[in-house]
Image (cartoon, rainbow, N blue to C red; front, side, top):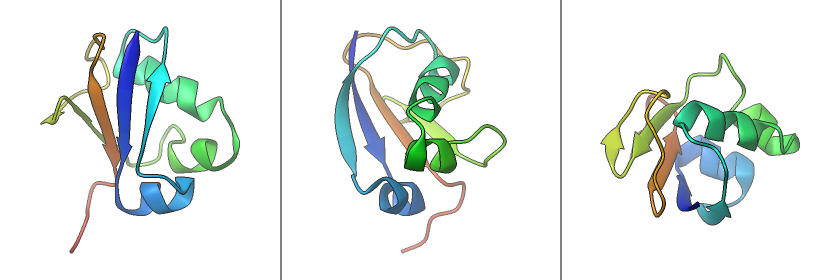
Length: 83
């Protein structure tokens, strides 16, 4: 399935991008996060298991057990963002 990823605040800074399109076989947010961590490098650091990261699915805060659907938008951001 094809999804759109959005990265915010310190995660965006660590990855050097605010968004990307991704073709994935992941079926849940947890599986997607694991897929991104498996890329290594900045992804492994920014999204590592145990690291506080909030996830939104189609602009709604979601648990990592939430199911992905084709065309979904997934946002990753630290638990506290400021402006």
